Length: 227
Image 1 (tube, one colour):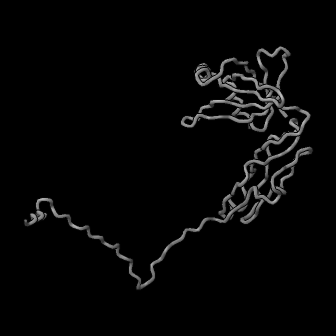
Image 2 (image 1 turned 180 degrees about the vertical axis):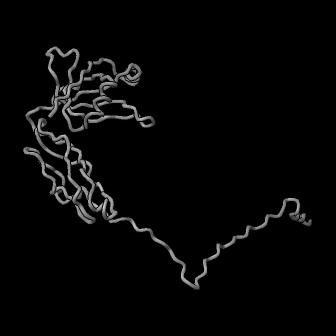
Image 3 (image 1 turned 90 degrees about the horizontal axis):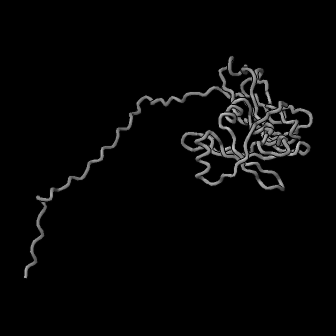
């Protein structure tokens, strides 16, 4: 596994106003959580984090954080726990990191990538259905697979790849239901044509006549009550 390092800075600022100021300065507010220890607020360069996210599937790689004022000058192995996005423009608002032990088993999601073009698609006109895009695995942090690559080139219409068909590396246990469908090739969609039988007439749309309103001036005045 490639070692990924990210330089970050500790922060004292907290609150919505301070976080907005950080974002305007090009930082992303973030927090590092570690079991049994107090969480540590940090700030991450937006440029560096976005660059990292484009090169790696951050939810399933170890990110070694190098915190600027760490007296021990050591890196902190972390997993990205959550990324919060701005709902309108999609900008990153906040990131949560989980500091982990490299000697304890963890559970993470690993992406599934289909390789090749199925026979059932290029020769039979079917379509490849990608059902599960990620698989949950349990392993040591240093054994996390980059991805699961599945060769689909020999699949014909009706063929299916289940979780049980995917081979995992040594030390990696897939936790999904073995019978769950990951990929399949479906038959081409048929267009339904509704035919009008001979002698059958198309139903004419019903015309609903509106009740004619009587102009106010044409309405009869109520007769005065006779005394």
